[in-house]
View 1 (cartoon, rainbow, N blue to C red):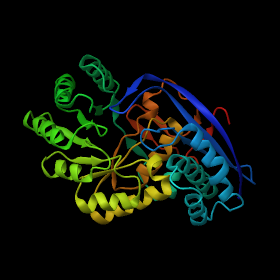
View 2 (cartoon, one colour):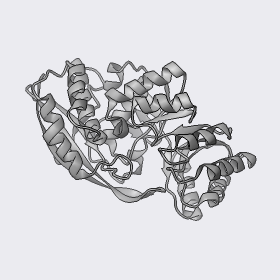
View 3 (cartoon, rainbow, N blue to C red):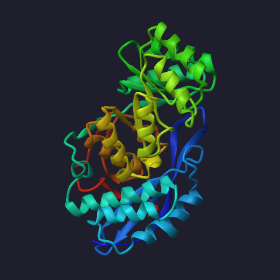
Length: 359
């Protein structure tokens, strides 16, 4: 099974409600999708969101990187020569991590299909379910409370609350959500780099004093400010999760050695795909640091690739794979079953997606 080329398209999926963070506001998933073709007619699928504010990738840069650099570097290679493919893929162009992730997941899709197994089993996994949280976008307190109540009524036991735009005022919205959903729902707080280090310490300590019960705080300060995040981690009890600070295995080592965070968030669009994400998993295992499997604003295709990795590695103990839950429709055929908060892994070969609109 040798790689022969690629077909590139786009997918447009409206969201149930606008996705709002401290960094951006989005009304629909508007992603690049690909079909990686082979000489046996087998096809591997991939997806990449243009998250310029985080990864620097735009739709144009993703398409150009895939079409003109990444795929030409791996055409003609047998899919079972995985290390060769990935070495060439990552050497074909600097950065462009979302474009690389898109092709990477298509390669892994084909690789697992060639072996006749679902991807999570090929990656060494035995668990066939993953539980995800659901994102509550930053908004008015009333809207965030309403969205939280709705999520819990739909079976979600873990909420990821977006904050970071109003500093100390964020305490009130988190407190209101806790009062509305009760004590048994896990609440994760994501500041998306929105706080200054001293303010982050004040906010988190206040949340601790109020005994609101926060599972973790994600990326409280700017991605490059590892010293600031280290200060927050060392001066609070609540676990701190590094997200935008970690794109590569080297980044993970730096954060862990500095003790700048307690946990590591792995996203395929930051790492450049599963191949590099596995390296971060191995580093985390060495240092006994737990990971979350996260996603950008992705649809079922890309999220399913992340879910397969989450199901495969025990060091990934948390999942933020709610992209499909935020979408109004599912335009794909096949793949894992998203039953509210529980993702049931497909038992068919590969990632499981068998048809992608526009390809």
